[in-house]
Length: 113
Image (cartoon, rainbow, N blue to C red; front, side, top):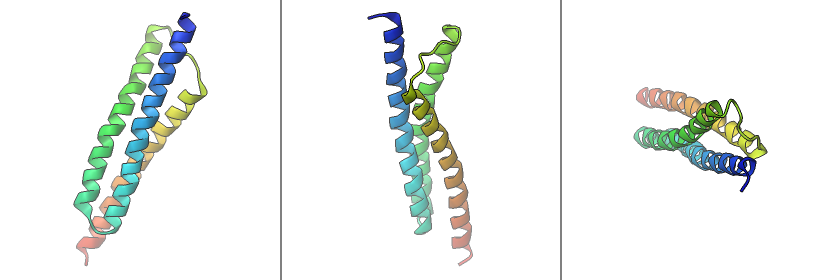
């Protein structure tokens, strides 16, 4: 296999790993919001913790690509799937931040009852 083809394959494998792991994380964050809305704050926090472990796995795959890029003088084979993976990574991170804030709000509302 040619070097460029191998590079594209490696990039795409990492992109799919990122998409799968951060997609799982985002789903758990969304579920956590629902749990908090129902008053299950501990369940919500557990989902955030679990989702963050998945997110960290995706982030590690992304970091690996960045490190490879540094080794290869900035050359990582571009693919649309990689752009999608990075978009999903950023969305999941935003969801985590919003989820943590919403859990805090629901917890405060519940404490005031």
